[in-house]
Length: 301
Length: 216
Ligand SMILES: Nc1ncnc2c1ncn2[C@@H]1O[C@H](COP(=O)(O)OP(=O)(O)O)[C@@H](O)[C@H]1O
Ligand SMILES: [Mg+2]
Image (tube, protein in one colour):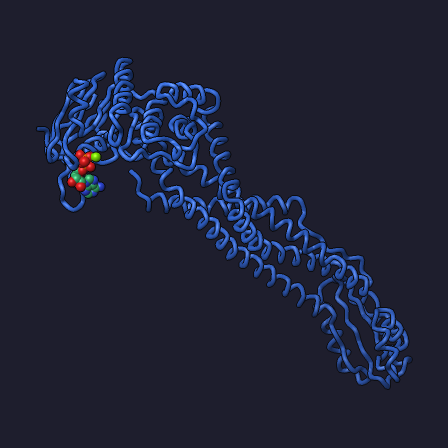
């Protein structure tokens, strides 16, 4: 047990020594790996934030009924009261043209609103359903569309559903990208190690001829690969933190414009640890393939 | 300790470097292997150390048929042998000490244990004061002695030396032969190849002469 530990401690020292011997090459590889990891990991963080932001939206289905511009307030109010009486309806709120314009001014679009000679906004009624199911209001929406005084009806859950689907698609894309870049990562790591093995061919040969096992020869390279992956993951974590900090300001501004206190989140501790673990594993896998393949190619008896 | 039975080694290309050769070497012997360049001396030593495998016949060393050893078993087999290579095979990017400690690290001996044994070996070959030097700064004789220190540091039962005195002047060659004598006196079996007949005449002992892969 002690001997085994010493073997590993020795391999680790040798691996660290190789970083010290060629710091520039190691730094370069680590940076390349860091960027390769940052792409999918950063996208993941972005997705996570979008989901978070989208999650803050009302899950209730909403139907907005926009009247023709010449429809009277009376007509609109009457319809609102009628709708309110329906079973599937939780609330039917009348929004007057003036109130809508007022709201437009409040959302940072004030300048546009001020430049308008006439109020282009119609009266509207916003209907919310009792259930989250967006289908619950579709019959009602259809009926409203045929109403002579109504100009346009929009089922507001449509875009929420589209956003959710889009986010799911983007999520799948992130995983596919992660898998591809993971492969690239292992290849980068493996290639560095392959070059290292050829550079140390003589040493490997001597060691083998004086009684080193293949395992003994492999181990420092495997440690080196895992460490390289770990450092690459660490670089990615730092890069993501940096990007988050850079984007924080503009995101906060944007959120404020929508009346939200939304804050851009970075990688959590757990996610970060997972990132490091996966990066180290990929580095190790690349090293493993390189070592097995190169050892066979060197063919030292 | 070493039993060769009708051993032939044919290299790719068809050249028979060792041809139907049989010999036995007992524990504690000191044997010289002579013959001109190309006679097959190096090949014979490589067969014994399982660096090459016989094309036919059997080579039995420490009771093990080396031609049949699995790759995974080779390291443990080789740890009983101290190898001194014709071309030194020193690592020039590390110190004298680090070269000599390599066999111990390979066997899992590290730290103070290893350092003590390395210094004892370097002392035996007169290199104790140079442990921090790079091998490239050593003279030819000193490099050869470093090879010897590396070969004996793990206290092997058998030492195979391939032309250890080639390229050395007589005074250095004499020193090295005296060292081998001393190892032999503490029970180490030695097989030393040389094409220097004069050396053998001076030191006596059993001598095997090779010519075209056969014992003459
Ligand atoms: N790896 C090899 N491949 C092909 N031929 C070889 C190889 N090694 C040695 N030989 C040939 O085998 C013969 C014996 O070589 P060697 O054992 O090195 O002799 P010595 O050590 O006595 O000079 C020589 O003719 C040499 O050219
Ligand atoms: Mg030779």
